[in-house]
Each structure stands twice: as structure tokens, then as C-alpha cells.
Image (cartoon, rainbow, N blue to C red; front, top):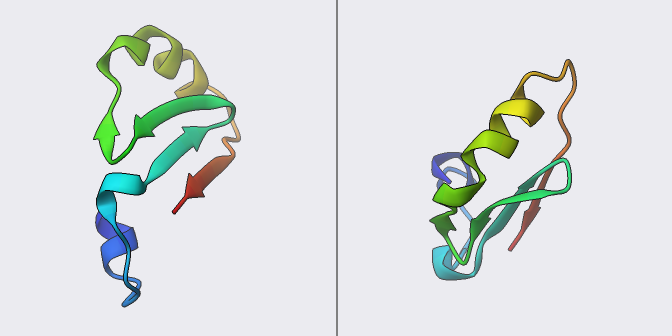
Length: 54
């Protein structure tokens, strides 16, 4: 989220969704706590695709 703020573009943080691979980790600007075990598995991978919906 902080990197998005540094983009010098108008972004509504309440509409930001962030995915690590296909795992939704941030919905409407808020982190999803219940995905922690799944996120740990994703972060163990050598490569991670990060998708950000603005």
C-alpha cells in the first residue's frame, strides 16, 4: 500500500484489492487476517505473482 502511495497518482485506498498469486490478501484496502496459513504457503514459493486492482 505504501508503494502505491508513492506512485503520485490518485488512488482510493478503500478500493484497493491485492492478490498474491490467486490468494486475495487485501480487500477494499484492508488486510484479510484469516488467510495467514495460506499466505505463509504462498510466500514460501520462489516466485510470487502480485496483482493489484485499483
